[in-house]
Length: 234
Image 1 (cartoon, rainbow, N blue to C red):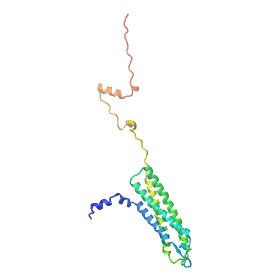
Image 2 (image 1 turned 120 degrees about the horizontal axis):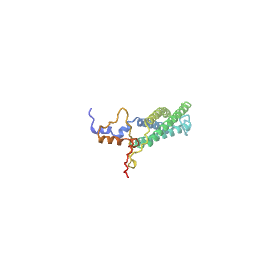
Image 3 (image 1 turned 45 degrees about the vertical axis):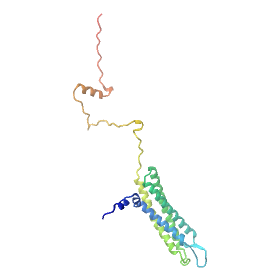
Image 4 (image 1 turned 90 degrees about the vertical axis):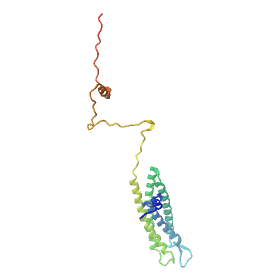
């Protein structure tokens, strides 16, 4: 199948590659789940009873339950948007210190949101069990949707924490490298000759002999014999 060049360029673009990342897909799904939780209770979560016109939460008339779900869903949705923007900044290139701090913060928040959604799911499910089945005419489907996607949010944030932990493990620390050329000084390492690679001994000859003697340390040279001076006769 022949793909037009324009579509191929689009598929190879940075935006498409960014959207295909598992972490990006997970954040988008987590944001959608959070949006469903707080929007369902925000629109139909407050209803009036048959004998009263006052609005109450459909979850056992407990306004704290609806407020918790709406607040947690809204904050989680904003958190997903914020980290999507930070992911885009990281993919374009950043310092190693920024990447390490960002990955650590991502892991901590993913674990924190996992705990929040677990507590929220248990709280909402408990309030729904104690709710009267005929207390409200509307809002039952919205309450069920909020509870269901609160449970799905636990799973998606666990997977998000797993991805963040994998990034932390794969991010090997970069050793600090000091330039050896600072100040115009170049440091070189000379290894001593080993037995496997003997030094080539020069051939016989006056020039070669002087070269071999100069290669030795000045402290190891053979001392010269003293010369005898002839004293003139008086």
